[in-house]
Amino acid sequence: MKKKVAFYTLGCKLNYSETSTIGRIFQERGFEKVEFTDKPDIYVINTCSVTDNADKKCRKIVKEALKHSPDAFITILGCYAQLKPKEISEIPGVDAVLGAAEKFQLMDILETFEKKDKPQIFASPISEANTFHNSYSFGDRTRTFLKVQDGCDYSCSFCTIPLARGNSRSDSIENVVKSAQEIAASGVKEIVLTGVNTGDFGLQDGERVETFFDLVQELDKVAGIDRFRISSIEPNLLKDDIIAFVADSKRFMPHFHIPLQSGSNKILKLMRRRYLRELYADRVAKIKSLMPHCCIGVDVIVGFPGETEEDFKETYNFLNGLDVSYLHVFPYSERENTLAPDMEGKVSIKDRNRRADMLRILSEKKKRHFYEQNIGSEFTVLFEDDVKDGKMEGWTENYVRVVAKYDPVLINETKHVRLTHIDVQGLMEAEETFQEVLRH
Image 1 (cartoon, helix red, strand yellow):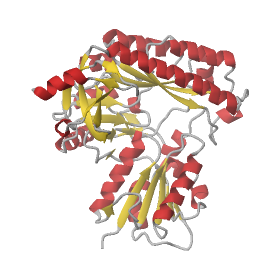
Image 2 (cartoon, helix red, strand yellow):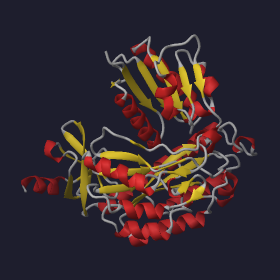
Image 3 (cartoon, helix red, strand yellow):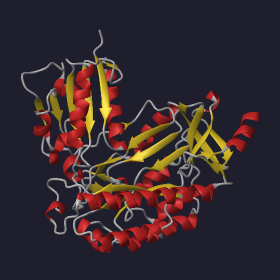
Image 4 (tube, one colour):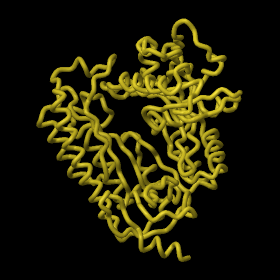
């Protein structure tokens, strides 16, 4: 009898790509990959540490796992496992905790997955997480997350990622291209490039041997992939040559996600970010001058220590005047072993949440305005196999979510459409042209 294993992933696209790769390692060793509720023998839970409720989420998932399979062997790995292995080992039901350097070796470390008298912890110091492990997600026919870079050499005062993932390191362009070719051969049409600090691609053993721009140019030549997206890139690393290349490329989509974190230079300095708001505004202006229809997403943190009401208004007004398409808003949360919790000017939870709500409302307005600007334009939509109420959805090149009547022939196909109007759910309709497409 094959042993059954189920996976659960918390956090970012990078985690999803790594879970998927670990899942393939299990399958290659003769395990059967099953759903969370299918009474697996082993659970592998990949954790995140970006916000302060990682502990709560991890506990909840372990509790749920034990409901479905009380005798299962429960393994916890990922960023939270690296940062707080002992704390996780004390969660009832946890059998093994693996840190950043160990997670890809879990089959060799745990071997039989037999329960011991007490939880096992395998977590080396983060300095030992210095090798790059190739990863990409698999199973979604439409889109794959391809990891090209890991770790971070930046030292932002709010962030634990360098402590959880180690120094910046990358795959080689040759390996990334090989992975992209494998993904293309499987029939996937879109690849999302992921990393902790994606734009810092090119460091191997601490030496810069290649650049992100080199990578983008080589991937553009890979046959069989219709679309590439850059998941997130720091504004100081988003150079003019990358923007100009994406503007001319048929394969790299006009869509950037660029972390801002604050629109106040005072707060950016306290956060130890590597740019000021002027550079950010310049990057947005540059993108829009070459690609007026480009979608630009923004990460923002509110309620950072020292952020007064005036500082927040500065951020709000800066974003309000910026030609961006949507915001990902995070109320600041204290993380151990970072500089920010010891800073003066702590902001109350109530004020953090109020400010976050204000920016989320602004985000909805921005998104609506961006969608409205695209009505009447023609794009291609890559349709997905997630069907609800007889409708299917997909994304345009510039990340507008389009809804259309279900047709099985169109799943994982790119189709030319004209955007017509926004429905009550805030999704774009493209019915008229879509029907024309069906007739051809």
